[in-house]
Length: 295
Image 1: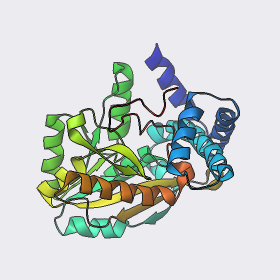
Image 2: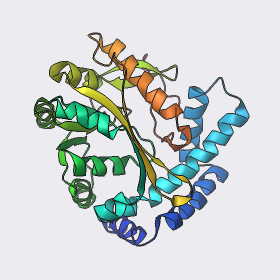
Image 3: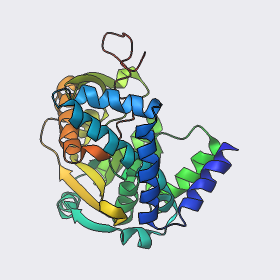
Image 4: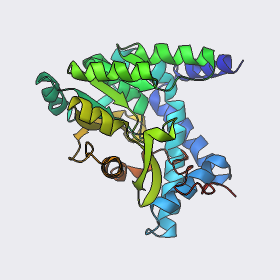
């Protein structure tokens, strides 16, 4: 039943134009801001911790904007997962950094594309997989009906999907050694604590994956951050690819994770309202103490 309702919602949303969907997202996001709930609570805690030096008014304004952008994110999933690629490509009005990334691949180097939860990150994967060989690491949905729907939607432009397992990791390593691109989320807590270290994220200790460091050191791959930022009034999107500074392949995992989070911060600061502040990034604490979201 859950899968039927979810897929039905996505297909209905895909019938509407993007400006209308983003307007509905504005209304829903504004409602999440006005009426207290779990999403608003988590978002506020994250913003207050990450931007403690900003004024209360500044943080409150960011909270409202971020919830509105979250509403837009929920409604644009219909077009993202159902529209033909030709129709989606018409909505990508600006692109930066694609030539630089393709130049690295033309030299035979693999590329690790870090796509944080910012803007329309799902669309980033589709666009990439249409333009070059692309393997995406993902976490399979627990509900089987939804999982199969998402798998088909995400791979329809040619991407190879690899679940986050030992088998999936072998797939991405092989792809990088062939000079191809792989994609993964840099701001998601790994399933196993042994695959992460604590590193500062906006000055707050956050469990951070060590996979970037391991892949970069094993394959000598180049790392790019990718974001698909929403443009105003539902006009479309701007794709930005940016090669990151050195340090993510440092021998020390904490040093490498700190560099990863530093690049993530730089990406978020360029468009903080479109970041998914509702994600419980600080759920785990270094001392094993209570979560900052408790209470």
